[in-house]
Image (cartoon, rainbow, N blue to C red; front, side, top):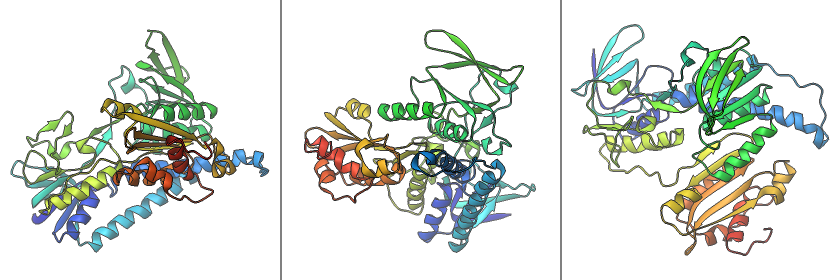
Length: 462
C-alpha cells in the first residue's frame, strides 16, 4: 500500500507534531509517522511527567516548612501510586489534545516505525507487521533522542533506570545514586530527596550543571545539600557491581583517590544520543553523532529536513518546536532560518534556575568587554514573603553600550520569568531599557530592574 503527500514528518514529538501542524497550515497535505505515543519523549517520558512529580514534591516541601509560618499539620504521608496516576492523567490529556490538533489540521497519522529509503520513499512498519510505503515531496526527520548509557564496566549486570524508565519505579528507594549532574540528574535529585530517599549525585565535571552559570550551580549545590543530597563532583565512575545489600558504584576523583558508594537504586542520567533509526539507509552528512543541517534545517540530501534532538544543539522541547516550525515552512517552499540567538534554558529544581543568552564566560570568550551585576533576592519583598529569598538575578551586558548579552535567574518561578529576559535579547535591549521599565510590586520580576539599576550604578535597593 502506498500513499503520497506534500510533506511527511517522521516522529511525533515536539519537533515533529509541531512541524506537521505548521505544514498543514501552509496548505500542504501532511502525514505524521509515529511508532509510539504522540508527544515524544517530552510529553511521555521527560518534561511533563518530571514537572508533574516536581510540583508534587514541592508541595511536600511546602507542607514540611509550613510549621515555621504558623501553619501546623499532622504527619505528612503520600501515595507514590496516586502521584504516578496523576502524572499519567496529565500525559493522557495532553496526548488527546495533540491528536485533536492533528485531526483538525486534516493530518494523516501513520502508526509505525518509519525508515527513509535511498529513493526518498518511507517504509513504515506497523506493530502488527503491516508495511506501508509513504511518498512525499519533502521529508522532515524529527525522531528525537534516547538516553545515553556509558560503557561502564559492570553496568550491564546491575539493575538501573534511565530517564525513560524511572517513571516505572514501583516504590521510593531508600537510597538512590544518580550518575550525571546535568538538567535531568538534578531534577530527579530534588524529586527523590523530597520523597525521602537518600540521594547521591555523581558528576564528572567540577560542578553541577556544568553547561550553566557557576553562580547558579553554586546556589543549587547549596540547596541540594540542605535537602540532604550528597554531591560528588570531579568523580569518574570506574565500575559498578551488585553488593550484598544493593548496588555499589566505584568512583575515582581527580587525584586518583577511590571510593565505593552504596545505593538501593541507580539512575543513569548522563545525557542523550540522537535516534538515527529513520536514516540508517541514507548517506546523509553528519555533524559528529548528529544529522548535519544548513541554516534552513535542510540536510545534505535536498528535500529532506531535520529538527529537534536529532540535529544536536540545545536538546530542549521548545527548541525542537521552533526548529520544527522553521523546517515545515522551508519544506513547504519558504526560506526561514533557524533563530537560536535567544534560547531560554530552565531547570525545575528547588530553587528553579533559568537563563538565556550568553554566560559570563561565553561572552568573554567571544571577545566582549563584559560587565556583570548580581541582585540578591534576599531583599526582595515577594521572595521574602514566600520564604524563598535565597536566589538572585544576574545581568550580563556589554560594557561600552550596555547591550544585554545574557540573564541568569535563581529563585521561585524564574522559569516563568525568563521570557522577559528572552525578550530583552530578542529586541537587542540595553541595560537602560531594562532599568527604565516599570515592574509590578511586589514581584520577584522586580529584580530585573534592580539588577539593571545596580549595573548602571543607580540602584535603589542595591
